[in-house]
Image (cartoon, rainbow, N blue to C red; front, side, top):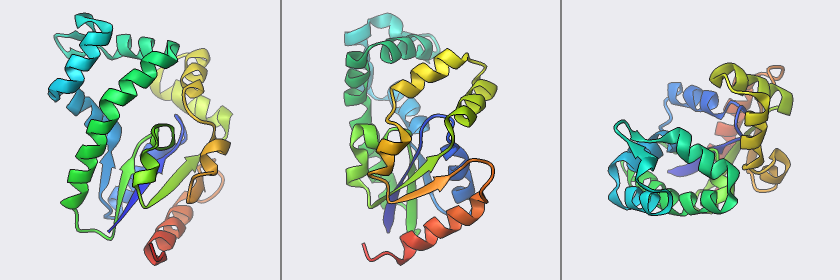
Amino acid sequence: MKRIGLTGGIGSGKSFVAEVLSKMGYPVYYSDDRAKVLTAENLAIREGLISRFGVSIFDQKGLNKKALAAEIFHSEESRLYVNEIIHPVVRADFQEWSTQQSAALVFNESALHFETGAFRRLDYTLLITAPMDLRVHRVIAREGCTKAEVLARMQSQWSDNRKKENADYVIINDEKRPLLHQIENAIEMFLLSKN
């Protein structure tokens, strides 16, 4: 089994590619979804966040995502702190999940494989890119936020050019090039590789 990191910046379409891969029969681990579950269930994560941000970081519904987002998007130190608490737990959860899969390829979908160094623990990385203006448009349409908010979130992620230096395969999701053909080529490359 080969473990493939599926990544891309906000608005790149990595979640859409993950859905396509899943429909093709490949197991996909959604890191963000699992991080939300683990943040609600894992005592070490909960205690770590409360010790840094106070009890108001959780409310009756669980994690106060808006408050946490405000903290991490405006403070690099806070963002690194949160990453150090949550990401090791998510990586361990992925390792356990992947041992239960039987497919030749499994995918770990996460926006931050490169930023957190998680890509080093995977066999390959598949990077989804898209033009900046298209990414901004997609996020505004999806989340109803402002352009300034989208750009602030993008600032916390590596640029596509920096990610490309470490990616094993790049898919350009610009709504011009055939996406399915690119996905099929990536799968073929991963399946045929000797690693």
